[in-house]
Image 1 (tube, helix red, strand yellow):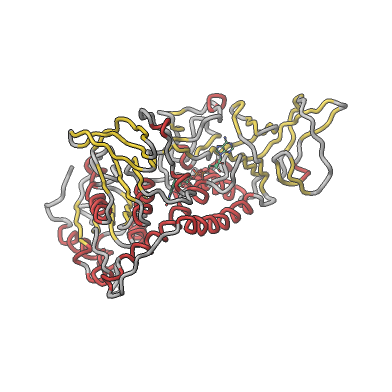
Image 2 (tube, rainbow, N blue to C red):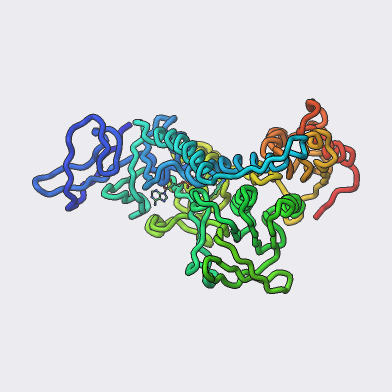
Length: 512
Ligand SMILES: Cc1cc2nc3c(=O)[nH]c(=O)nc-3n(C[C@H](O)[C@H](O)[C@H](O)COP(=O)(O)OP(=O)(O)OC[C@H]3O[C@@H](n4cnc5c(N)ncnc54)[C@H](O)[C@@H]3O)c2cc1C
């Protein structure tokens, strides 16, 4: 279906079109028949172009919504000011995992002797690591860009802002639709810390493009982005100090998952401070100094660079949500399980709704919103958090699905818990990967798995066995009945499962 021109509005914009079948003009790409601008006498008249569904933001969440609606035969317009590709591909998941591969290889080379290989002194070449990353990312981005240029979409490469609940301005285009999906993602937040702005700092965006390796680095923050980048730089030979405000790194999860990572980072030579308060930052000659307190003591750390990785904020600036009548809570766009905002025809998916900063969830939410938006009269699809999964790609990796111990206690959900260490597991001994453990939480009466957590080697892969079992509401007994090949890392999952199976229906449940 093609977009329909609606009521004309007078505009002074000079613009002329030639009648080509395809065009890419003034930021709009698609079929000429979709054009809704006309000349009337000498005055240029701007028409409103109507789509059935308009998506603002063509990243992972927005593209998933667009693709879902398009596959149902609906006319979809996508507005994205670019650069096209989305955070995951351009400055998130993919570039970080690409460079981490280099530092992981370097770490294994440094351990050569441990495996009976003559020792080597590897030398990182950051410019080449970044070149490798840039090449791969370009390929991933090209695929997404090509997908966005699918002739079944109309792509507006413009900044979008609402002018009313039913109209959006995208550059010189006034657009309307029956439904909208906001998928504008998040941006790096810039905390106010005395001296930090004056002294200057790197963000994750900068760190992924840095070609000259700093000799020393202070990392502010203890979340996934801070940790992955801190370990990358540390492993390629930069002296890294990590400063985290909370009691432990990865403060949103259970503490036992953070400790093996902290231990490994320290073993590798990183200084890790938790439970701190930042005071100020100064610069003397070529060194930047961070002043903070730790366990009642004032401490200063100086380094060539500071990496500020204290978090991101929702990207709603300039969207004019007030004009759309979309309400926010604490700056987060309020959505229900169907991904609807407070305006029933406007949806918000991905980072911008503040629920998670995880790409597969942005995609799931996009698919749900894309479907609900065009099937408003049917039973609506909803997003459920039961299988929420998060992975941190440090070494050891940290992977979690479902409820944590803290969640169970906070929500007064009774649970049984059991853990098993990688240092007691045959295959991890063979691999020389001894940090971490597997932890399972199950329902005390039924044995249904409520949550699973792995800190250790290949945790990002191993967690998928537990996601699959939990998807089917499986129990610890199911885990025991399923065959596990020997010797594998996956076998470790059966040990805490066995312990729990012995306790189910017993009287040892924790009840928060
Ligand atoms: C360093 C780093 C590493 C990460 N690693 C992982 C990981 O390993 N695994 C994981 O699951 N997640 C990871 N994430 C998080 C993940 O990248 C995001 O959760 C996900 O990409 C968000 O997708 P989105 O569709 O919500 O937003 P985005 O992909 O950011 O898309 C938003 C789009 O909207 C456009 N836009 C914004 N405002 C406007 C406007 N007003 N008008 C028009 N267009 C606009 C932008 O150009 C952009 O294309 C990482 C994040 C970072 C920063």
